[in-house]
Image (cartoon, rainbow, N blue to C red; front, side, top):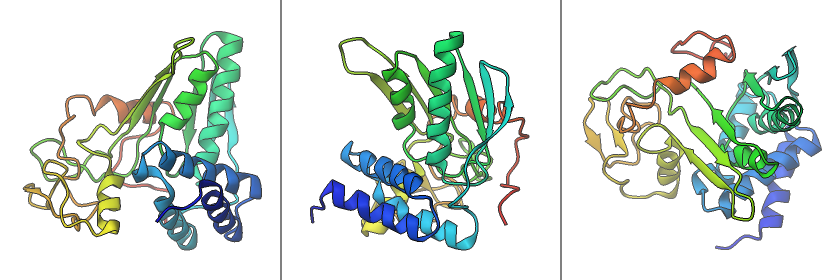
Length: 253
C-alpha cells in the first residue's frame, strides 16, 4: 500500500492537534516523521505516532509543552523541554545552535526533560546545512545491559554528527550505540515479522534470540556490539543537563 506523503503528514498532524498539540508543532512533528520514512528510516517514521499517542494519553508526554530557557551564557544554552514532544525541543535547539555558533564560533545547547526525538540525523543535518559541524548525543531509560551481562544499565544512547561539504551532499552519521536501534525491533514486531536478524537482541537470560516478540525493554536488546563506545555518550548527554546517571526517568509517573 502506497500513501501520499503530503496526505500522511496532514493525517499525523491532525492526530496530534486533536490531542492538544499546537498546530505548528503538530505539523513540525508530522513532517519529521514522514521525512524519516522518505529517507528509508522506517523505524523512526510514522509508525511512532502510536507510541506518542499512548504517551500523551497516559500523561507521560505533554503535547502543549514548549521548551523554556533555564540558562543562557551566550555560547551555551540550557533548555527544559517540559516533557513536550521531543521534536519541538530538538528543533528549538537546532535554531539556537545555528545562531549561537555563527555568533560565537561554537555553541553547546543541552535539553532536559525531552521525550523521544525521532531520527537524530534530521537535526544534525540541518545544522550542517548552515555551514557548521554538528554533534548530537541523547540518553534515555535503561534497558540495555553491558556486553555479556543481563542487568540493564544503558539506553541505546543514539548519537549523530553531520559535516558540511560545500558542493557535495552533507555527511550525516546517525546510529544507536547498540547493535540495532530499539525501534527496529518494535517495527518488526508490529509488522508481524516471523524473525529478526541474529545479533539484534538477547532474551532475559542473556541468550541471543531472533524472536521479534522479545520485549523491547528486556535485558539484551542490542546485544552490546558497540559496548566499547557506549559509556561516554550517556555521560555527554547527562553532564550537559546536570543529571546523575540513574535507572529511572524521575519525572515520569
